[in-house]
Amino acid sequence: ARGVRALFSIPPRRALFCAILAAASATKMSAPEAKPLLPGHSSLTSRRTAAADVESPHSRRPDGGDGKPKEPSGLKGDWGAIALLLLLYTLQGVPMGLSGSLPMLFQERGVSMMEQAVFSTVAYPFAFKLLWAPLVDTLYLPRFGRRKTWIVPAQACIGLLLLSSSLRVNDLLGPVGEGAGSDVRSLTALFFVFYFLAATQDIAVDGLALTILSERNKELGATCNAIGQTLGYFLAYVGFLGLNAYGLTSLGSFMAFWGWLFLGSTLWVLGVRNDEYTAPEGGVAE
Image (cartoon, rainbow, N blue to C red; front, side, top):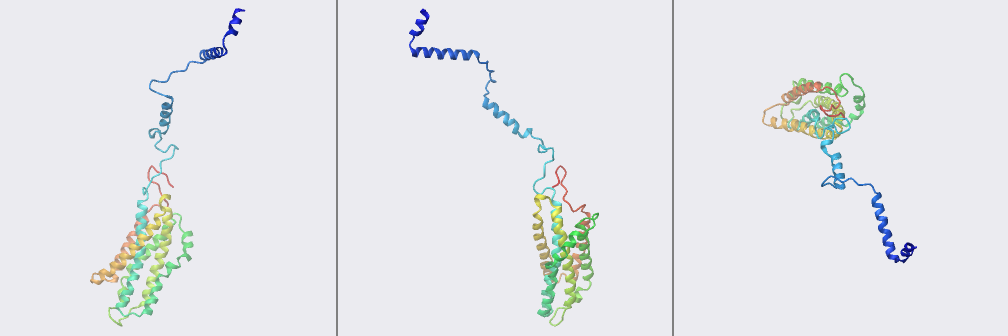
């Protein structure tokens, strides 16, 4: 009875404080003992260390982590293809440059403007090459190569035609002088064939650029086209007119030089294993 009277005699605020202390003591006694962290470490530091271990470059696999070899970057694996495309496109510009220099020679020989206009039709094959482009793209010898089937014959024919016509082209052009005259129709037919063969080769080389270059460098095919054809035109046009102005060469001897170069480059094309892109060792084909 005394204990009950003593309990009810405690002021309310003091009784509430005692109840809170008793509850806190009971919770502390029933809670499991926490394991201490390593000295000098905190939970945040531990989480950061674990994340760093996951993202560490030393923990990554050298093959990219997915079991596949890493893909090459930049121009690795495409240097040989780019050199080949530049050569082929440069050679295409040579007949164009030679035909561009003939009007200057016609002017020295008094050829009329009407006949020079007839000669300008030699460039028509490049304008209408889309007519036989599907044929070049679909007919080929699988064992020889889809693009090589057309590039090699066209290249060889241009070289042989340059060599054979170099023996007569000076006679067709005629001597320098007013009224000397030139066989414009024969020269027109000759260079029309040159343009036809170059246009056919251009169709095949454009297709080659799409398959021999890697996926990341396919746009360089158009760059090789622009640089190569411009360079070939410059070498044939400016090179011939400059040398001819000093009497160092004639049209026949200049064409013979390029004829041998065409035949030599054909051997390089023959040495190309296939028309498809081949990844370098340690890379993946795209």
